[in-house]
Length: 87
Image (tube, rainbow, N blue to C red; front, top):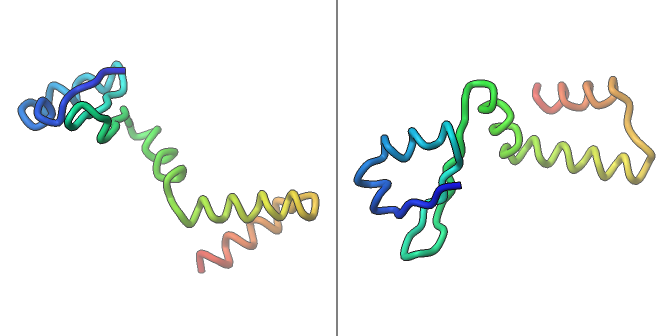
């Protein structure tokens, strides 16, 4: 993991982005962490979007709570529920 200052990022963003293929980057402001930059390619982008999508996260938590409460939900029932909320 590499640490760069916000100033360094402003001065040479291309150099910082080049590092992302090798390691993640933490951007600091006034010596404290302010942001994190992580490497993404096309395959990782889909996973990243799903993991940070609030509606998807609510669906996962809802399914988990129901599983704990009732002992699970079948695949077909979950598929119907997702299709119903999309449409």
